Image 1 (tube, one colour):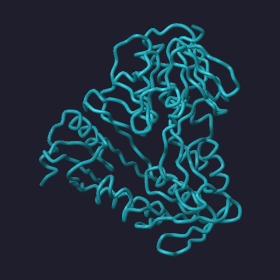
Image 2 (cartoon, one colour):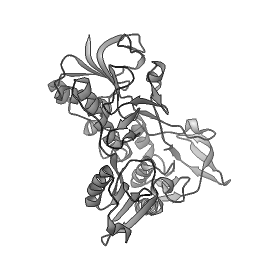
Image 3 (cartoon, helix red, strand yellow):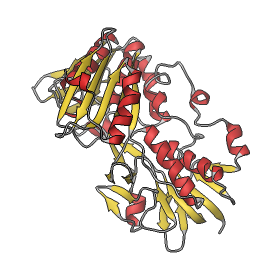
Image 4 (cartoon, rainbow, N blue to C red):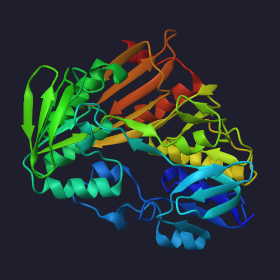
Length: 394
């Protein structure tokens, strides 16, 4: 085969797959392709220090340039793979070039969803370095912004815009950010962190329509009938897996993602998938656990690379990540498929731990603010299916 390992996508899952393949003795040509024009980079800074203008592209590189040379990994930018032929083990680019591979990893990630409102297609989103670069240029030219969506990306970006001196409001459907996903106490803490960062949160609101464009200002009409006039609107309304390539190729899918087992293997023997695009079986949970965060993508990429090199490997970690909103860090580890109770513990130093339990009292998640020890312990309890700590129920 021309290429021993083809990696489609240059995010943490893709680069980790290439690295892990080499670490586990994989030989032959390793090629990473990406439609972007940049070398692989970290996405988390795009809503934080990169957006604030505190770092630039070299600062957010996934790996130093020497990494690719030392590991004999080729990175080809500006290459958009548009067709897979699993039976022939071939990938075809938009320009018609064909890459034949022995094994391949699909790590195409996800795309930002446009604002689901009349005129929403004209509203900027934040997913790529180009998006963030444009947004930080605009931040130097505007005085007000509306961020639609109270998820972590929306909260992070809002705090960064406020730090740039932009009067920023977040609107979301929950009375406090992520109330339905994380419970009232975690949501209240996120609202407080936003407030400390100079961001106003307006809950229970939906945007029905948006008029305007960057440079001319926007008018956002809420479902209450109120119209909000701002210089800039940012949509942070979720992501959609970039899975069409696999779907058209006939791979098995699960709810719009590529179905893979715990070794990240798809329904095609020589094809693997990892990261946001995959719906992976988790060996510890004993069920499929979709994820949307960089740490899980990197973990899955390492599993895929090892498996492609012929090493027995399986994904068994509890999903987890952290978010930095302004000057505060919140950490969350959970299976992510719901909880029966969310029990808060308020610490004397102002920290917060929220323990999430199922109907049998077993730990299924933990969220912490200024309490790293509970985060570390919580991940172990979730993995074990152990009861939440007795102290947390007092």
